[in-house]
Length: 156
Image (cartoon, rainbow, N blue to C red; front, side, top):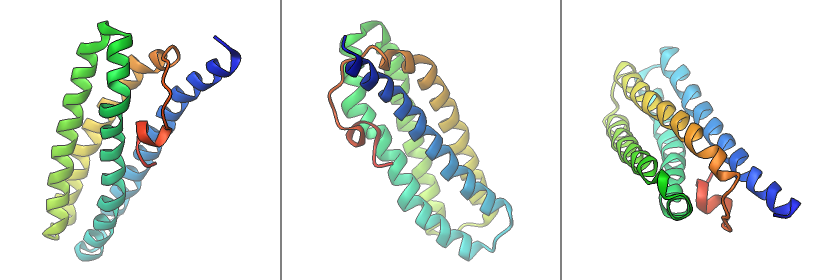
């Protein structure tokens, strides 16, 4: 393996960490705004923007992994197929939670209800990210993956 190939592989692991950190930050900022007790109508407007941005970014991140990254890992490392299956299940669950959040935003739910939706997304998202990082970061350092970062990790 050339030095350039090693650098590129390390960059995949670093990029996964960066994307996860940006998604964590976006969610935390929104949770803080809701917790500050902002009136429901402005909070709902802010969350509408948040959902169009954050929700699209998180969904795009998971769709890219499902489409681009996970099949490559499953072929290269068959022993990780069960891990990949669990991660895909998480993606589905997070998608369901984001749909509930979007519905709450659309009906201008109270800040308390919006906060509960955000807490649910946050808990599952964090658990998912930690599991994914624990199981896949070292794999990314050995994987031959010639793809666009945006296609693999989404639009962030």
